Length: 265
Image (cartoon, rainbow, N blue to C red; front, side, top):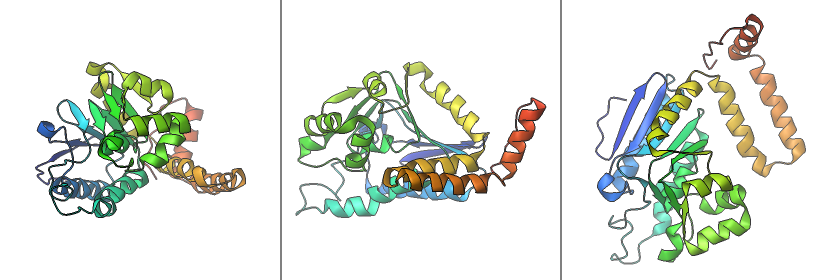
């Protein structure tokens, strides 16, 4: 993780990796170069067994404003830009990678999250937002559809009526309203965002990460499974985890009335 980046920062301490979008002058909007660096960072995180939790946040006053429309790959000044290519090559792999990482992913929304940035924020397992932050499905104002999984995640989180309102009107949704609607986990005061996230990240990094990974997979799979199929998957995962070192340690710690020491094994 010693790589030097131009558009992001990547830090690692005590089992927690923090990936910070670092184009504050452009509200951390994506370019092809930034996509490349984010992909390299996620590959490094996935390959490092010492990383047990990932925090994703933004520098400056924004989390991510989505796609930088000045980027030549998507600029309408070019002859019929292929936005589908941009989705297939950059955004789809980004969302799939974040959702499939076998460790907890926390998104810390420090400011505006708009367009692809709004739905990227929702790819986290836990989403914390500063009280001044906001979420904007700005696609309709450009004649586009919500991407980065927006059409999939929004109705599942807030229902069809609210998903349609957000997508068709493109209105700003405050962090407090997002929490009330169940779009995010928690809204906190601005000054408490990173201290709160850091505390939770350390807690998760010290936890049974193998069990966390299977929990993520089971919950995500439930969207396409019947109840009976989910029960079968729970059985299979529980059988596997019941033979793990973390389960033995968790039971021993409970019986000894002490804090457990999990290793993710």
